[in-house]
Length: 441
Ligand SMILES: Cc1ncc(COP(=O)(O)O)c(C=O)c1O
Image (cartoon, rainbow, N blue to C red; front, side, top):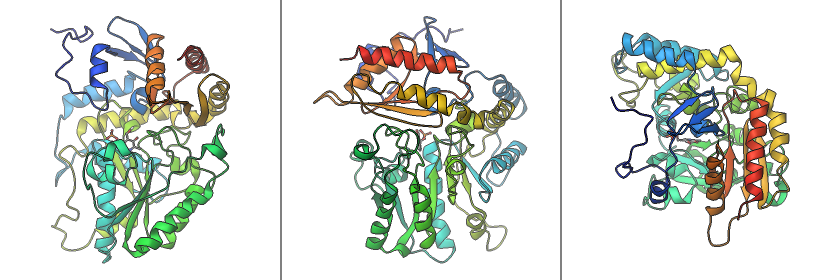
């Protein structure tokens, strides 16, 4: 039997995703096992998880109810199709999620990732208008610095240049609002920035250009995660909602990061008290343990498809693994864990401590902004002239050497620990980051 904790000696075959492959393979950072707040390297060194894996392990690692659920499911039912067939756990899970979601978002479609959830939501939006006799509404509006995964729809509405520039024309009929990041007015804001509600007016400008009657949906992350934790200014999301309502445009929240407790409520929609027409989710749905995404839709969207002869398929969309039994079991074990331990609201209990801790780094070298909300935070560093991203990457390597996993995007350090974190571990994160910043070139 191969021992999975022994580092493989040939790293060349795996072309790694979103990775500096050559640099990684010269200096690999391997994680071989995990328990609650910690990873372990193949040599047995403990690494405190400051990023919940990749923003997904919200309940921490190796949680018994999830492990047990998966083990039992593998013996009971390994796979069953959900195309014109069903299995009980997919329905049970959809009903449980329905109770968690904001009122009115009472139908759920399953996918296998955040990217697939995004595609599902965009396609549903366009098809919905067509089902209502408004086939001219085909345009999709995203936002600069938005991240919506890596498939063609997602990179089209997304606003990250590096993710888009290699891929030609992408999806037609897409436009972008300006992003909301405004360090000149909002640097070092605690929680939601005071300034910038008027950035929502950019949507009206775009709608005037295309005519609102051509627009199907607006998609935004309530808090942009991947481009460095960009927090919506006070009133901004409400204003987007009002503008969408005024023009009968669907509002989609991409909650792949903010969903399942990251801000201190099950969804950011509830945290900000702004209810979209669809919520896109993944990651924390299964605690990252198995791939799964869910798209929540309002009843009127679902019902718009429920016409015509009953033996006909209503919506030509879905994946072989939509509602996979193993993923459903993992998600049910995850929801049990969240509920037993009150994890979907725990971030609100820790938010003040987290905020004060992260902002205590304000005067350290290279720090040009600090942002926080719920149990998410970002420390933006001044980049090294001519060598963008290098300073943050150096910080990441140094953190790993000191036993802490952080994530970087550009020259921004992003932090989003599992929601089971204790205050002493929050101290450990910021003590470590602080000592690194003091010794960084
Ligand atoms: C907001 C958002 N949308 C979509 C995605 C894509 O999810 P996945 O990598 O599971 O496809 C991510 C991933 O980080 C994300 O943060």
